Length: 118
Image 1 (cartoon, rainbow, N blue to C red):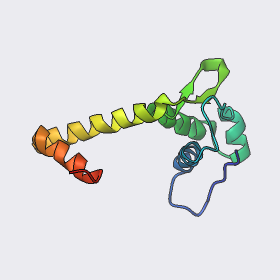
Image 2: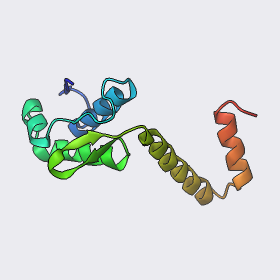
Image 3: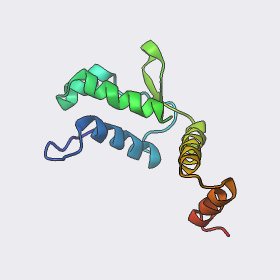
Image 4: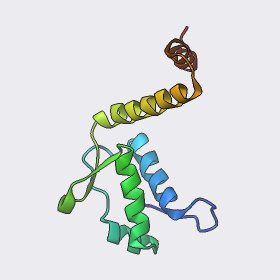
């Protein structure tokens, strides 16, 4: 996979790397089990600090897109990654509606409407 940064973009470099990995996973360019370049290798290729790439990888792992396996590197997660991300999104939604005081029944109705269901 070829990563490229836009130096003129207001988007921070770590976010550009993160977004490119997500896009490649979503479009099938990066499949489950694919090993991402080591942090230092990618940082050198992109002329970035290693901590910048490490942050992108850490955020990808927190979001469920990749898994870090120590010396084995950072690997694209398998099919359960989508379910994991959906569960995290559902948890965030539930927290938001609780905070707003929306009832569970209304929250479910909002989700159904967003999905185009009645």
